[in-house]
Image (cartoon, rainbow, N blue to C red; front, side, top):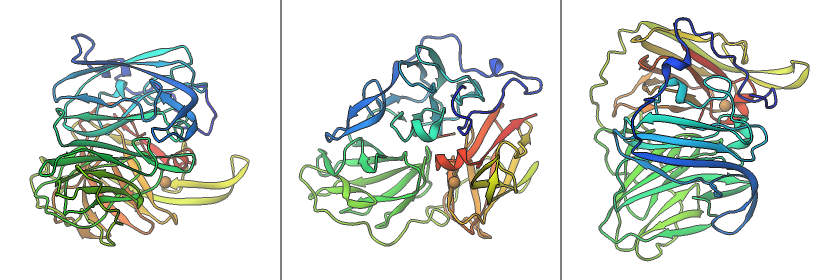
Length: 422
Ligand code: C2O
Ligand code: CU
């Protein structure tokens, strides 16, 4: 990549022992079931609600087009950078694609320069709600609009996608400020796929009827029960909320009722979210994980802190992992097939939504209290200040993978590392 040195891009690739990213691509042959061209531009554009934004678009809009595929489909995306000066890529946030398709500038590919293109090919292997975004100078390009939703599941009548994003201080749902409405008949089972594309956690939820949290980060929740509460959706995270549309309609609320989406055949009343919060540590019922986290091959510690002062000749604040800021943070080395346990603690004074590429991890405990609900699989985990989480995952996707804070300015201020296969 050729952008500013503070961006998430200064890894050199090609030093992975015994493998190169060329060995880690998606299927190179076969006719795609879903083939799209996505063209990125830097431009002034209008939000769906009319306000003019100076930012970035994909195929002329932000959010970019919804990509929809079914499990087993081969997806092919031809990405064209028409006018993004710093270059751009597409990362498939939450889809555990082969490494070379991961779209991280400086790690799995070079940023696509203006006038260039890049073809991504990968199989849709797990149903769920995901999103795509540029992974070059991400803190600027994602904020400016270079992202869109991707859903792996057949289109169903009650399926609603709601990407929440703040453009230039204006919070939107699907690129619209204020309150909108989606027309769904009473009695329809709605599945509302909420995507937080901003940098901070957001309380979301349905008001007007109880709802179930049926999936988190593209993984089903086991045994969900109806709640009337808010769900704290981490930056980068997704949650699927399910409810039967009541006679008077219901409303998806993004933080405040002033930014909400009516769902029903009439406009439901505006109401704020309840004070209660859904806690996934105890929500739902247990189910097999498919591996035994007690038999770990690797145990890692991951302590998030901060340093204030002059660093790299500049006064500022840097986030650290085990006392180091990127790129001085050692990589986490694993071998294929390892059961990996990680203890993440945070004494940095702020919350950090930690995002691991290429893998889903299960939450084992928070602050020493074991998880007792549904397996809580995440690709993006909100780690609050003074919190400690234990997570575990299977190293089943070889390559070089980023692990970083999805409050994207924090990533460029040192809070990132990599997971690397031996
Ligand atoms: Cu959604 Cu490394 O990012
Ligand atoms: Cu952070």
